[in-house]
Length: 220
Ligand code: IYR
Image 1 (tube, rainbow, N blue to C red):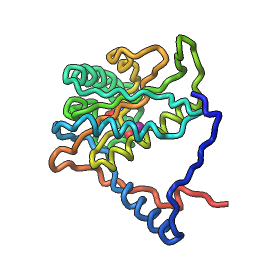
Image 2: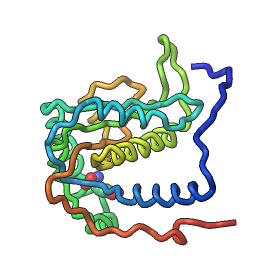
Image 3: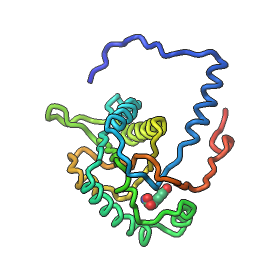
């Protein structure tokens, strides 16, 4: 891709009052997003997922390389394979790899190695990070891939919330099994595993509080 020409950019502008209100309302809206671990198996049209992915793919990226692939899994057999492999890694994590501090930090979330949502959610979106690209048989560089794919994943979560669906940002580490199960090319590395769907009836979430502004800011 070459962007050697510039085009006019005229984003919508607002009055100062509107800007204040919009910032406040956006915060209130996005603050209502929660990670969910219990999904309904109600199907969701693929067009919804495709639009969510198109939104995610508008994220900024190093040298505009968009170094990501969103793998969409709805096949029950494949979801089952992913669940089995994820639970195997998570068993090791919970029983051997995570230390006491980590296990203590997870206590309020009530998690364990058993992951039914990997089969219940109508879609699993596996976000892949491209360490490099192959263009017309040539190896090409990508840049700031963690930053880029992290931003795209944030956009993805916001798009999911905007659509009225829920998700979980899941990292059953090491996630290399996803590359094998999904048969992905050598340039791709699994980045996040994100079940997407509607919440199960009467879904509960931990009573978490977000840090106040003064704990997450420094002004100069
Ligand atoms: N991946 C494990 C453990 C886990 C780790 C963190 I850090 C979390 O914020 C939540 C869970 C699991 O999904 O259970």
